[in-house]
Length: 171
Image: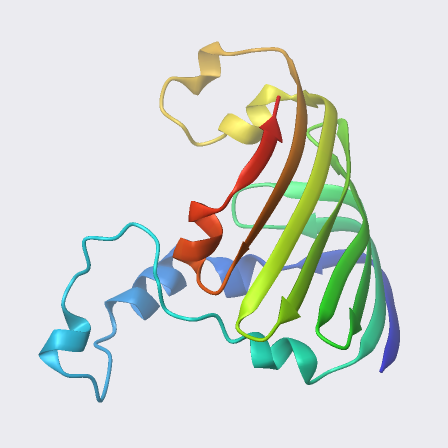
């Protein structure tokens, strides 16, 4: 599959709104025993990731939008290249304007058997700190710009496994 999507506005507010998410999470799971529904003491799940799905579609997708609307903020001038090939997933470039600053990075996911190897690099330069703190109590008193550098690597077969093996740096 090859696709190129571009537009002035992508609006995700209706499919990401908090009320809809709360209703979905309140639904009682069907067909599970009380033991399966019991709360886990773990913060991150050890349920295996559905990595087989990564190997089922090969595609190259390019996405460009002037504005992406999310429930609490908007992202401008987004550019993404998504390459899905034989169990390897790459999002590169991943560029956008966040809070009047720039973001540039990539995300790579490679699956081999039941294990995923994930790598990401993100650089945010001169973003307005209020873009990230919007909606937090007392955050109105914080002003300034923010630079963020993230370089992370991990491997694992579950969210818990990925979090346990997480390595890298954030500045």
